[in-house]
Image (cartoon, rainbow, N blue to C red; front, side, top):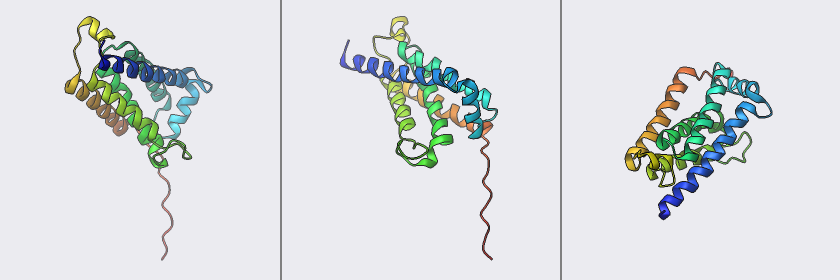
Length: 173
């Protein structure tokens, strides 16, 4: 294995396992799927239960996809899309840093950019993609990951994100 193969393996496994844990927590964590659904609903993702299941299952499937290096740019794209939605719905109004109240977008931005890089880098030789002859890396892999992620997120936000509007402040006359 070359250095890029090793780097791809490390990135895939760490990011993949992180997303598997995140998806597991959304579905079976302390608040369970109902807690996640309530939180999503409160952010304007309606119906919350549909988005809770979708998010949890995408994080699990895409996370395992990265771990095993299977359909790597598509797995990376699923994670990019999830991070874009999270960044816009939950983190963008809280500044950059994750330690800010409400948590900034630092974490989701980093995960999304790393997944774009994984799409470009490719899965490496220690992957199912390599074992079965799927060669989607370089700019093709990067474009698949980025367009799938950003496009999927945009479609979801346009069709299903309905945050409550805050009443306008009274104007002075």
